[in-house]
Image (cartoon, rainbow, N blue to C red; front, side):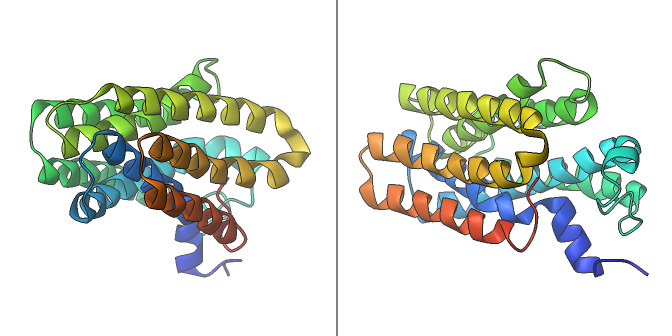
Length: 234
């Protein structure tokens, strides 16, 4: 009998508690592009959520043999989620996320940014256990969310989008390095660092002159921290 109900096991694989940080990445990207609208945020939030969730499923599927030794409590090695189904669901969500982004604006820039994000996610999932560049790739994944959102919301990407993408990339690189070195303290440190992604987004948004949307991004960080208490995000 599974230790977790079916739905909770899948929510754990999907790291749903971290999704608010993805939504604030999108928010910051479209604000920096100077093209904010609630409709764009909604559709791009859906696209980025699908891409993020697909990345989490494929991450756990690729990591299953190692997790069976080091993290046997994870849903796949615990027998709560089939590895084969995680691969199928993960890659299907990555594809649907790209389609959703192209639904907002179907052009070469969006296709390139989306394909680059899918490629970076997949590369990280396959190689991160043995690749010294893994933290950089992880950071680039978040930066590419900015680029994807900006490209889908605006015709031309202004400098602010690239600067914002660079800021969140550097932050996530540092987060990834710290998380790998935290050891037993990771359970206390990592959730706060993940929630901090939304604070970086808030600073980018505030720099672009949108106070209330920056407040919304801060709330995204708070929701992430609250969600981490219910579903682990690491």
